[in-house]
Image 1 (cartoon, rainbow, N blue to C red):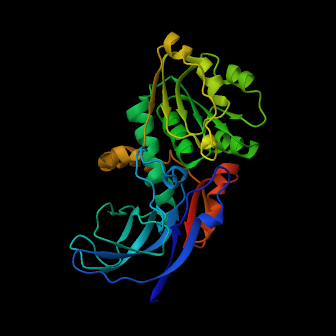
Image 2: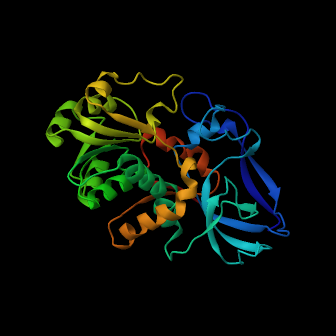
Image 3: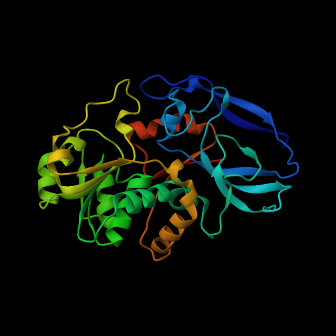
Length: 332
Protein backbone atom coordinates (compact mmCIF):
# COMPACT_ATOMS: atom_id res chain seq x y z
CA UNK A 1 0.00 0.00 0.00
CA UNK A 2 1.42 3.37 -1.00
CA UNK A 3 -1.41 5.60 0.25
CA UNK A 4 -3.71 5.63 3.26
CA UNK A 5 -6.82 7.43 4.46
CA UNK A 6 -7.01 10.13 7.10
CA UNK A 7 -9.83 12.38 8.27
CA UNK A 8 -9.19 16.10 8.77
CA UNK A 9 -11.28 18.52 10.80
CA UNK A 10 -12.05 21.31 8.31
CA UNK A 11 -14.58 23.47 10.21
CA UNK A 12 -15.88 23.93 13.74
CA UNK A 13 -19.11 22.11 14.65
CA UNK A 14 -22.36 23.97 15.17
CA UNK A 15 -24.56 23.21 18.19
CA UNK A 16 -26.48 19.96 17.72
CA UNK A 17 -25.54 16.65 16.13
CA UNK A 18 -22.21 16.29 14.34
CA UNK A 19 -22.50 16.71 10.57
CA UNK A 20 -20.18 15.16 8.01
CA UNK A 21 -19.33 18.51 6.39
CA UNK A 22 -17.01 19.46 9.24
CA UNK A 23 -14.66 16.66 8.17
CA UNK A 24 -12.78 15.79 4.99
CA UNK A 25 -11.51 12.32 4.08
CA UNK A 26 -8.10 12.64 2.46
CA UNK A 27 -5.59 10.29 0.83
CA UNK A 28 -1.96 10.56 1.92
CA UNK A 29 1.26 8.86 0.94
CA UNK A 30 2.48 6.28 3.44
CA UNK A 31 5.53 7.94 5.05
CA UNK A 32 8.94 6.39 5.58
CA UNK A 33 10.40 6.14 9.06
CA UNK A 34 13.74 7.91 9.34
CA UNK A 35 16.26 8.12 12.20
CA UNK A 36 14.45 8.14 15.57
CA UNK A 37 11.01 7.46 14.08
CA UNK A 38 8.50 4.62 13.97
CA UNK A 39 5.65 3.96 11.55
CA UNK A 40 2.52 2.54 13.15
CA UNK A 41 -0.36 0.83 11.36
CA UNK A 42 -3.35 1.67 13.53
CA UNK A 43 -5.75 -1.24 14.05
CA UNK A 44 -8.40 0.24 16.36
CA UNK A 45 -9.10 3.78 17.47
CA UNK A 46 -11.12 5.18 20.32
CA UNK A 47 -14.10 7.54 20.19
CA UNK A 48 -14.47 9.61 23.36
CA UNK A 49 -16.86 12.34 24.56
CA UNK A 50 -13.87 14.64 25.04
CA UNK A 51 -13.72 14.96 21.25
CA UNK A 52 -16.64 17.40 21.33
CA UNK A 53 -14.47 19.82 23.27
CA UNK A 54 -11.38 19.19 21.15
CA UNK A 55 -13.24 20.22 17.98
CA UNK A 56 -14.31 23.60 19.36
CA UNK A 57 -12.20 26.75 19.10
CA UNK A 58 -11.91 27.29 22.87
CA UNK A 59 -8.22 28.08 23.43
CA UNK A 60 -8.75 28.36 27.20
CA UNK A 61 -9.67 24.71 27.56
CA UNK A 62 -7.44 22.12 29.23
CA UNK A 63 -5.98 21.07 25.86
CA UNK A 64 -5.51 23.10 22.65
CA UNK A 65 -8.27 22.62 20.06
CA UNK A 66 -7.64 20.47 17.00
CA UNK A 67 -6.33 22.84 14.35
CA UNK A 68 -8.44 23.07 11.21
CA UNK A 69 -7.25 21.09 8.20
CA UNK A 70 -5.31 18.66 10.40
CA UNK A 71 -6.01 15.07 11.44
CA UNK A 72 -8.78 14.71 14.02
CA UNK A 73 -7.36 13.83 17.44
CA UNK A 74 -7.94 10.39 18.99
CA UNK A 75 -6.14 7.60 20.81
CA UNK A 76 -5.67 4.17 19.35
CA UNK A 77 -3.85 0.85 19.26
CA UNK A 78 -1.60 -0.30 16.47
CA UNK A 79 1.44 -2.26 15.36
CA UNK A 80 4.88 -0.91 14.57
CA UNK A 81 5.52 -1.78 10.91
CA UNK A 82 8.80 0.10 10.48
CA UNK A 83 11.25 1.34 13.10
CA UNK A 84 14.36 3.48 13.17
CA UNK A 85 13.92 4.05 16.90
CA UNK A 86 16.07 2.21 19.49
CA UNK A 87 13.15 1.65 21.89
CA UNK A 88 10.70 0.13 19.41
CA UNK A 89 10.87 -2.94 17.17
CA UNK A 90 8.81 -4.01 14.20
CA UNK A 91 5.87 -6.01 15.54
CA UNK A 92 5.56 -4.11 18.83
CA UNK A 93 1.95 -3.44 19.79
CA UNK A 94 1.59 0.15 20.93
CA UNK A 95 -1.00 2.66 22.10
CA UNK A 96 -1.17 6.44 22.09
CA UNK A 97 -2.67 9.51 20.44
CA UNK A 98 -2.58 8.67 16.73
CA UNK A 99 -5.60 10.48 15.30
CA UNK A 100 -8.20 9.51 12.74
CA UNK A 101 -5.87 7.86 10.27
CA UNK A 102 -4.73 4.43 9.19
CA UNK A 103 -0.99 5.07 9.61
CA UNK A 104 0.89 7.27 12.08
CA UNK A 105 4.52 8.40 11.92
CA UNK A 106 5.93 9.14 15.37
CA UNK A 107 9.16 9.97 17.18
CA UNK A 108 7.93 7.74 20.01
CA UNK A 109 6.82 10.54 22.32
CA UNK A 110 3.52 9.64 23.99
CA UNK A 111 3.55 6.14 22.47
CA UNK A 112 3.53 3.27 24.98
CA UNK A 113 4.05 -0.42 24.39
CA UNK A 114 1.12 -2.69 25.22
CA UNK A 115 2.57 -5.25 27.61
CA UNK A 116 -0.55 -7.19 28.51
CA UNK A 117 -1.66 -10.06 26.28
CA UNK A 118 -5.24 -8.85 25.92
CA UNK A 119 -7.40 -7.94 22.88
CA UNK A 120 -7.09 -4.47 21.34
CA UNK A 121 -10.65 -3.65 22.37
CA UNK A 122 -9.80 -4.39 26.00
CA UNK A 123 -6.75 -2.14 25.78
CA UNK A 124 -8.94 0.76 24.61
CA UNK A 125 -11.89 -0.09 26.87
CA UNK A 126 -9.98 -0.60 30.12
CA UNK A 127 -6.27 0.23 30.04
CA UNK A 128 -6.42 3.36 27.87
CA UNK A 129 -8.26 6.62 28.55
CA UNK A 130 -11.41 5.14 30.20
CA UNK A 131 -9.59 3.13 32.86
CA UNK A 132 -6.97 5.80 33.49
CA UNK A 133 -9.66 8.47 33.85
CA UNK A 134 -11.75 6.30 36.17
CA UNK A 135 -8.78 5.42 38.36
CA UNK A 136 -7.45 8.97 38.66
CA UNK A 137 -10.89 10.50 39.18
CA UNK A 138 -12.18 8.01 41.71
CA UNK A 139 -9.13 7.37 43.86
CA UNK A 140 -7.03 10.52 43.61
CA UNK A 141 -9.83 13.08 43.34
CA UNK A 142 -12.84 11.37 44.94
CA UNK A 143 -10.95 9.61 47.72
CA UNK A 144 -13.60 6.94 48.39
CA UNK A 145 -13.99 5.23 51.73
CA UNK A 146 -15.50 1.81 52.34
CA UNK A 147 -19.14 2.04 53.41
CA UNK A 148 -19.82 5.28 51.58
CA UNK A 149 -22.48 5.76 48.91
CA UNK A 150 -21.43 6.72 45.38
CA UNK A 151 -23.64 7.96 42.55
CA UNK A 152 -22.06 7.85 39.09
CA UNK A 153 -23.73 9.24 35.96
CA UNK A 154 -23.07 7.77 32.53
CA UNK A 155 -22.78 4.55 34.51
CA UNK A 156 -22.97 2.24 31.48
CA UNK A 157 -20.35 4.26 29.63
CA UNK A 158 -16.68 3.47 29.35
CA UNK A 159 -15.58 5.61 32.31
CA UNK A 160 -18.66 5.37 34.52
CA UNK A 161 -18.85 1.58 34.38
CA UNK A 162 -15.24 1.25 35.56
CA UNK A 163 -15.72 3.87 38.28
CA UNK A 164 -18.66 1.91 39.65
CA UNK A 165 -16.87 -1.42 39.58
CA UNK A 166 -13.75 -0.05 41.27
CA UNK A 167 -15.90 1.50 43.98
CA UNK A 168 -17.84 -1.74 44.53
CA UNK A 169 -14.58 -3.66 44.82
CA UNK A 170 -13.52 -1.25 47.57
CA UNK A 171 -16.71 -1.65 49.60
CA UNK A 172 -18.87 1.29 48.54
CA UNK A 173 -22.58 1.28 47.83
CA UNK A 174 -22.86 2.18 44.15
CA UNK A 175 -25.81 3.68 42.28
CA UNK A 176 -25.55 4.22 38.54
CA UNK A 177 -27.51 6.67 36.40
CA UNK A 178 -28.22 5.47 32.85
CA UNK A 179 -30.49 6.20 29.90
CA UNK A 180 -32.25 2.88 29.27
CA UNK A 181 -33.67 -0.13 31.09
CA UNK A 182 -31.24 -2.38 29.23
CA UNK A 183 -28.29 -0.39 30.56
CA UNK A 184 -29.82 -0.39 34.04
CA UNK A 185 -30.10 -4.18 33.92
CA UNK A 186 -26.50 -4.52 32.72
CA UNK A 187 -24.89 -2.45 35.46
CA UNK A 188 -26.90 -4.14 38.22
CA UNK A 189 -27.01 -7.75 37.03
CA UNK A 190 -23.64 -7.97 35.26
CA UNK A 191 -21.45 -5.34 36.92
CA UNK A 192 -22.85 -5.67 40.44
CA UNK A 193 -24.05 -2.11 41.07
CA UNK A 194 -26.43 -1.82 44.02
CA UNK A 195 -29.02 0.11 42.05
CA UNK A 196 -29.74 1.95 38.82
CA UNK A 197 -31.73 5.04 37.84
CA UNK A 198 -33.07 5.53 34.32
CA UNK A 199 -32.97 9.31 34.05
CA UNK A 200 -35.36 9.24 31.07
CA UNK A 201 -38.23 7.37 32.72
CA UNK A 202 -37.75 7.17 36.50
CA UNK A 203 -38.98 9.59 39.12
CA UNK A 204 -35.51 10.86 40.01
CA UNK A 205 -36.33 12.12 43.49
CA UNK A 206 -38.21 8.95 44.39
CA UNK A 207 -35.41 6.69 43.16
CA UNK A 208 -32.74 8.60 45.05
CA UNK A 209 -34.80 8.39 48.24
CA UNK A 210 -35.18 4.67 47.67
CA UNK A 211 -31.61 3.83 46.67
CA UNK A 212 -29.68 6.31 48.85
CA UNK A 213 -31.74 6.61 52.05
CA UNK A 214 -28.66 7.68 54.03
CA UNK A 215 -27.55 10.27 51.50
CA UNK A 216 -24.70 10.46 49.00
CA UNK A 217 -21.05 10.84 49.95
CA UNK A 218 -19.43 10.81 46.52
CA UNK A 219 -20.83 11.94 43.17
CA UNK A 220 -18.93 11.15 39.97
CA UNK A 221 -20.38 13.37 37.25
CA UNK A 222 -20.01 12.34 33.60
CA UNK A 223 -23.16 13.75 32.01
CA UNK A 224 -24.88 16.69 33.67
CA UNK A 225 -28.61 16.98 33.10
CA UNK A 226 -31.54 17.09 35.55
CA UNK A 227 -30.15 14.35 37.82
CA UNK A 228 -27.45 16.80 38.91
CA UNK A 229 -29.97 19.04 40.68
CA UNK A 230 -31.45 16.12 42.61
CA UNK A 231 -28.13 14.59 43.62
CA UNK A 232 -26.93 17.93 45.00
CA UNK A 233 -29.86 17.97 47.43
CA UNK A 234 -29.03 14.46 48.65
CA UNK A 235 -25.31 15.02 49.28
CA UNK A 236 -24.09 14.38 52.80
CA UNK A 237 -22.02 16.88 54.76
CA UNK A 238 -18.42 17.01 53.52
CA UNK A 239 -19.37 15.08 50.38
CA UNK A 240 -17.15 15.17 47.32
CA UNK A 241 -18.21 15.81 43.72
CA UNK A 242 -15.87 14.76 40.91
CA UNK A 243 -16.71 16.52 37.64
CA UNK A 244 -15.35 14.47 34.74
CA UNK A 245 -17.77 15.19 31.88
CA UNK A 246 -20.93 17.05 30.88
CA UNK A 247 -22.07 15.23 27.74
CA UNK A 248 -25.63 16.60 28.13
CA UNK A 249 -24.30 20.08 27.33
CA UNK A 250 -21.67 19.36 24.68
CA UNK A 251 -24.03 19.88 21.75
CA UNK A 252 -25.78 22.92 23.24
CA UNK A 253 -25.15 26.55 22.32
CA UNK A 254 -25.58 27.44 26.01
CA UNK A 255 -25.09 25.03 28.93
CA UNK A 256 -28.07 24.26 31.15
CA UNK A 257 -28.31 26.19 34.44
CA UNK A 258 -26.57 24.37 37.25
CA UNK A 259 -27.84 23.58 40.75
CA UNK A 260 -27.96 26.19 43.52
CA UNK A 261 -24.67 26.79 45.33
CA UNK A 262 -26.43 27.00 48.70
CA UNK A 263 -25.92 23.26 49.45
CA UNK A 264 -22.20 23.71 48.81
CA UNK A 265 -22.07 26.03 51.81
CA UNK A 266 -24.56 24.24 54.04
CA UNK A 267 -23.02 20.82 53.47
CA UNK A 268 -19.38 21.95 53.05
CA UNK A 269 -19.09 20.12 49.76
CA UNK A 270 -15.89 19.77 47.76
CA UNK A 271 -16.27 20.00 43.97
CA UNK A 272 -13.35 19.38 41.64
CA UNK A 273 -13.15 19.15 37.87
CA UNK A 274 -10.36 17.14 36.33
CA UNK A 275 -9.04 15.99 32.97
CA UNK A 276 -6.47 13.31 32.19
CA UNK A 277 -3.96 15.46 30.25
CA UNK A 278 -3.00 17.01 33.61
CA UNK A 279 -2.05 13.57 34.87
CA UNK A 280 -0.34 11.78 31.97
CA UNK A 281 2.84 11.68 34.07
CA UNK A 282 0.96 9.40 36.48
CA UNK A 283 0.03 6.79 33.83
CA UNK A 284 2.47 4.09 35.07
CA UNK A 285 1.22 4.47 38.65
CA UNK A 286 -2.42 4.49 37.54
CA UNK A 287 -1.93 1.31 35.53
CA UNK A 288 -0.24 -0.28 38.54
CA UNK A 289 -3.29 0.63 40.63
CA UNK A 290 -5.85 -0.51 38.03
CA UNK A 291 -4.29 -3.75 36.80
CA UNK A 292 -4.88 -5.90 39.92
CA UNK A 293 -8.61 -5.13 39.79
CA UNK A 294 -8.65 -6.29 36.16
CA UNK A 295 -6.55 -9.43 36.61
CA UNK A 296 -8.65 -10.51 39.61
CA UNK A 297 -11.81 -10.34 37.47
CA UNK A 298 -13.36 -7.34 39.20
CA UNK A 299 -13.61 -5.22 36.04
CA UNK A 300 -15.91 -6.15 33.17
CA UNK A 301 -16.46 -4.15 30.03
CA UNK A 302 -18.28 -4.21 26.74
CA UNK A 303 -17.31 -2.56 23.49
CA UNK A 304 -19.47 -1.07 20.75
CA UNK A 305 -17.37 -1.53 17.62
CA UNK A 306 -17.84 0.35 14.36
CA UNK A 307 -16.04 -0.71 11.19
CA UNK A 308 -14.03 1.51 8.87
CA UNK A 309 -12.35 4.87 9.40
CA UNK A 310 -15.26 6.93 8.10
CA UNK A 311 -17.70 5.34 10.57
CA UNK A 312 -16.11 7.58 13.22
CA UNK A 313 -17.93 10.64 11.85
CA UNK A 314 -21.47 9.46 12.49
CA UNK A 315 -20.29 7.39 15.43
CA UNK A 316 -19.75 10.53 17.51
CA UNK A 317 -23.50 11.15 17.53
CA UNK A 318 -24.05 7.93 19.45
CA UNK A 319 -22.77 9.79 22.50
CA UNK A 320 -25.54 12.35 22.10
CA UNK A 321 -28.33 9.80 21.62
CA UNK A 322 -27.04 7.32 24.20
CA UNK A 323 -27.40 4.48 21.69
CA UNK A 324 -23.88 3.19 22.16
CA UNK A 325 -23.63 0.02 24.20
CA UNK A 326 -20.19 0.17 25.76
CA UNK A 327 -16.87 1.69 24.78
CA UNK A 328 -17.04 3.18 21.29
CA UNK A 329 -14.26 1.80 19.09
CA UNK A 330 -13.56 2.06 15.38
CA UNK A 331 -11.93 -1.02 13.85
CA UNK A 332 -9.70 -0.16 10.89
